[in-house]
Length: 111
Figure 1 (cartoon, rainbow, N blue to C red):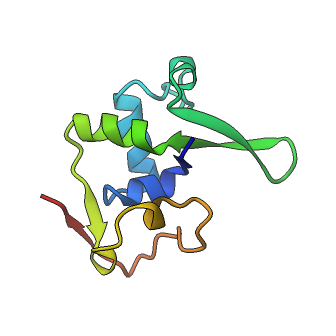
Figure 2 (cartoon, rainbow, N blue to C red; figure 1 turned 120 degrees about the horizontal axis):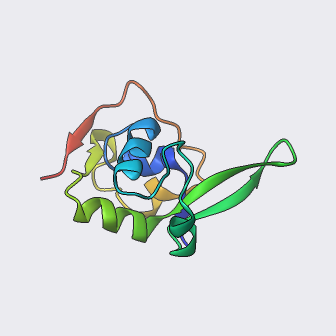
């Protein structure tokens, strides 16, 4: 399963992870308290992964399924101006050392 954390996923839409979280709530993929709904897990939109320290975890979202529902609900995609032409796995790679959102970078909506 191709998964990604909220920050790089939000980056595709020019949105912070917190904004992405609100969108996912609005689509019914998260509950009021911000956790993925049981249906979201059952339908394969999200998976839970272990984190540090031991006993903690984080959620990763299925890239294709989640972007499909966001795109289908007309959330506009955006790209980093400096990343034009590099859209794809490089931006979505959760193992990439460059998944940090740099506040000095600007976004452009893809029309």
